[in-house]
Length: 255
View 1 (spheres, helix red, strand yellow):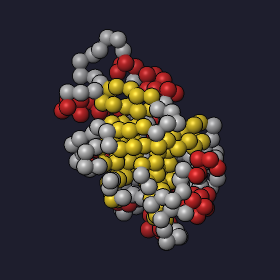
View 2 (view 1 turned 60 degrees about the vertical axis):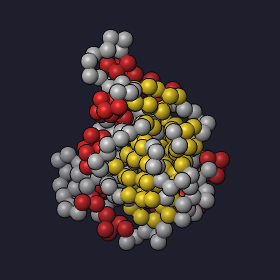
View 3 (view 1 turned 90 degrees about the vertical axis):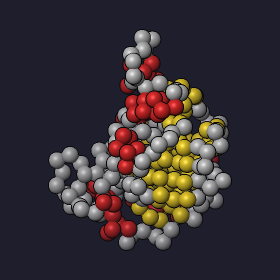
View 4 (view 1 turned 180 degrees about the vertical axis):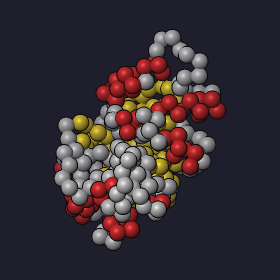
């Protein structure tokens, strides 16, 4: 079953350009240097789902002309990955159905806290309608898409990556156990966070990400969740091994 992957956003928590920043990356005219918050759309002939819905979710949906969404899947509860959940109400209106949302119990608690109005007993007219489904370490399905959770660590915070067929998506991580790495071998495409060059407490650096790709040896790898400190898209791309590319907003793959 072929899947279509669209990178809705490839930037870090502040996006690029950053507010009030005049660095050469934030002022670049290259569209590939303009990065909204990280999110990815996965489609088959029957199903469309999104992994994470950050603050730029509305803009991303409009840019890619997304007319259908069957589910939202969350990796973790940080604001740059959940802030756009309110936008599902557009699909509620079209389908007259609740939006299925797949998340761990911990992430669900954060959703209840951050979007209290969605889950209030007194429903205000026009608010988003969602149906929560709890995920853990077990494989689960969204219609015809089978997702295998990958456990990674974002400093001390557990985060879920996801494997779909021979495609895997890992964001916001700086440690993966040997056991979980086994799930990431023999891939056609690996998507991995590569924040910047300097060490960071909770993200893989550029070099760490390259070394991990070499270890896991996918046919192709794409880096996401990049900060402006990493550098200009065209310049950084020249430093990468042949099987690694920087993803960019709007990039589409057929896998």
